[in-house]
Image (cartoon, rainbow, N blue to C red):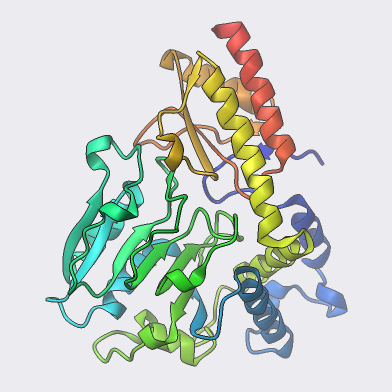
Length: 360
């Protein structure tokens, strides 16, 4: 079986070593004669799988006991609603949001249904090409939380320096950068991430939330309350067992391969190689402020956009998949998550060089 290189923004590449292990375990998990997909979520076998995955995630991010880790269905987009529903006290409560890209705008739209939203910083005037410096964020003292997207998948913009973050209840969408490098969780009141980029299959979100923020909300359905998941070890109902299981396999793979410090070095090497090639070329361009460039999502434009279809067709013929930019911005985008090996980025650069020679 041949494997192509997948640069999709999500669902994204899963490490080949993990997929090989999965192939062996799907019909018969550890001699039990059935697949994890067929197990009861209440069985001792699955409970062990779930508890081990949760602990490995905690170990990777060095999460202390002040926080609870929850596994919730629905992906990160559901959290756009759950965050204000759980953290605001009424529809008159104030919360702060950073407007730094397409996913920020979606989160803001949802939050306005549940409370008063102030925009504490925005890069809209710069076409979302530069992440606002934390020193410029204007956060009202009455705001109950401040929401930010750490890495904007579509625009390829990221907050790379976390040294000057304000000391407030920060809530961060980390969907496209989680586990790509170490992250100081103690700077945040809450983190959340959809699984389908750096963790595992789609349909699962992992939430890291300070225990003091988990409150019972009598007016909310049980399935929309963080307390429900905290009180039931995320098993109030049948959880997405396969996604949880495969995510745990990815956590084991990360720990086996040097943890997040090593993963940061690998990811920086991949991103630096691709950005350097683009910057040195007159045929390709990345117009994101260099301080704000994402390690995970590298958008780029061709000097002649009439060549876009040809580029994508020839790239696919060369085993380089899903390089089209998001429909809202166009161009190209290489998402180089943990599951994309350095060899994949090297192959992409080699193809880009040849395409430039033939079409530049």
